[in-house]
Structures are given as C-alpha cells and as structure tokens.
Amino acid sequence: MEAYFLLLIFVIALIVFQDIYGAVHVSLFGKKYDIIPFVTYIVFLVFYAIRDYIGYDYAMYYKTVEGGYADDVYASKGEYISAGLLNIANYFNDPHVYFFLTAAISLACIVYACHKYIDLKSGLGWGMLVFLALPVGFLYTLSTQRQFVAIGIMMLGIRYLRQKRFFSFTGITILATMAHISSCFCWLLFFIQSKRINKKILAIIGIFGFFLASKATSLIAIFFPFYMAYIEMAIGTSGGGTSQFILYMLILLISVVLYYFMKEKETYNFFLKNYMFGFALMAMLFLFDASVSFRLGGFALLNAIFLIPLWGNAFSGIPKIFFKCILVLALSFAYYYGLITTVDDFYIPYRTFL
Image 1 (cartoon, one colour):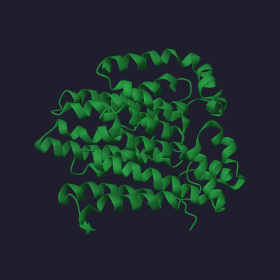
Image 2 (cartoon, helix red, strand yellow; image 1 turned 120 degrees about the horizontal axis):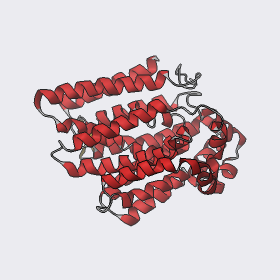
Image 3 (cartoon, one colour; image 1 turned 135 degrees about the vertical axis):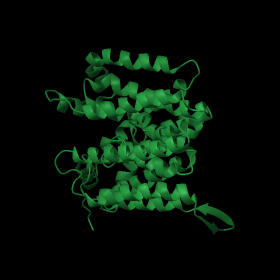
Image 4 (cartoon, rainbow, N blue to C red; image 1 turned 30 degrees about the vertical axis):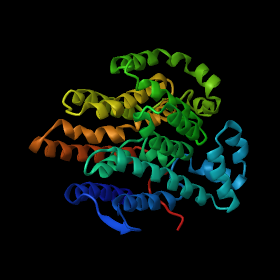
C-alpha cells in the first residue's frame, strides 16, 4: 500500500502548494511555463508505466501483445487506435510498452484538462485528488486501458463541448471511439447541453433507465455485442458495486444541493449536467450488471473531476476552509476504501517489473 499512499500524499501536497504559491514558472524559448502540471504528469506516468500485473485486465492486454492478434480483436470493430498501440508493443516484443503508451497519452490529456478547465488556484491538485477517489477514475484506468485512452481524448474534447462546436466535438468523439467504441455515447452530451434539456429531464431519464434493466441483455447484444462476455460472467453471480452506486448518488445529491449556493452557476451547471447524464447511463444498467454500467457511464461520471473541486465555492471564509479540509479527508477515505475492497491481488500489493 506504500506506493498508493505516497501518490495520495503527493496530490494533497500539490493542493497545499498550489494554494500557497500558485504556479512555478520557468522560461523556455522566451516563454514562461508552469512546471507543476509537468511534474504531476511525470509522477503519475511513472506510477502507471512501471507497474506489473496491476489491474483486472492487465493480463488480457499482456497476452494480446504477446499473441499479436490486436487487429483481429480490436481493429475489426473500429478500435484502430487501441489496435495500433498494441501492435507497437508487439513490434518491440514488450507488453510494457503498451501500458507506457496508454498512460503517456491518457495522463497527458487528463492533467491538461484539470489544469486548464478547473478555474481554481489549486485546480490541478483538486482534480487529481478526485481522480484518485473515484473508482471510475484511478482504479478503472489501471485496468481498462482502451477506455483509459478514450477518456483522455474526450477530456480534451470538453472545450469543444463548452463552445458548442458540433463538428469539432463530433471529430473528437469519433477519435475516442477508435480507442474504445463505448465512447460513442459521449456524443449525446452535445444534445444534453442543450437549454431544452434541463436537470429535471435528466433525472426522469435516470429513473426511467431502471425500467430498461429487464431489456438490458437484448440491447447490449444488439448494440454492444463485445460486452456480452461480461454479461455472461455476471449471470448467476451476486452483482456488486453497491458502494460505488452509493458514492455516485451521494456526489449527485450534494452537487444538486450546492448548485443553489453557487454564485457562478454556468460552469457548474455544465459539468453537473454531464455528470447527471453519466449517472443516468449507469442507472440504466446497474441493476442488471454493475461493471458494464460503470464502464458505459465512465467518462460522463468523471466530470466529477471538474465538478467536485467547485463545491468549495458555495462557501466563504472559515466555513470554506473547514469544508475543504473535510472534503480532502472524505476523498482520501474514498480512495483508501476503493483500494482495500478490490478483490484478490489485482491492485495490492503494488508491483513493478523493474
């Protein structure tokens, strides 16, 4: 657990450092650059890249690289980016190259998005803390490599979604589907952000989703047949994921309540609607299969990375400081709880190939 705790300490220290000192600039070619995002990127990249058999799907991708059948499995369904990264690793005859490439691409996008899109002095630190705390963030991206890349690409596309640039956002979504085809759902976010779609409508969609659970198998078989492997494994088991569902529900409830105390509602509402859409997607399949529901709602749920750091803006003065301290403790506990509730030895202890 030591490596995981060190990562948490680094992120908390990052928040404190940014709150006190802000940015640390260096001059390069006549321009000033903040090196804090770069340092954060390197720390996370090393953690991800040198790991060995960490994550539920690690062995599957390891064998895919060794077997050289990425084109048959992934390119055949349009995931050309994922197939390409796997083929590069196969060319070098080293599966670890694949995990390095996915981390290098995805983390660059996530760190950039946290740095640019969270309008707080310590926005990067807060964004990475939420990333650690959410199971669909840190834990899932240690496992679901193709979706990790897709999430990173979609993080970059947030700017086009906010600017309502339809063709640019569509292009980013298409690019993300080449990493993981489930990203096609993200395209719906463009319409979710329409003024005609309010939070009440999203809530109704989420509730209605529960009634679709009985038809979930047929819908998945038609539109996402590659997920049937997860469905078949889930049949006859006890399900699971209740604690995650409660966590995402709690985030939703707090976010909705704090919305009414926000002075600047536009940005907050943007990320809240994205998150609500992810929650609705999750709700549609959760009663049937929790794992699939989290994967499909993953990117939209990860808008909590941008949403939760803004919670502090609902307070001022001493209450704000107190709330932020409580939030750090709560997120740290969520991170710890997520780690200790993982099964077998897929995550603990942390192992490297060095």
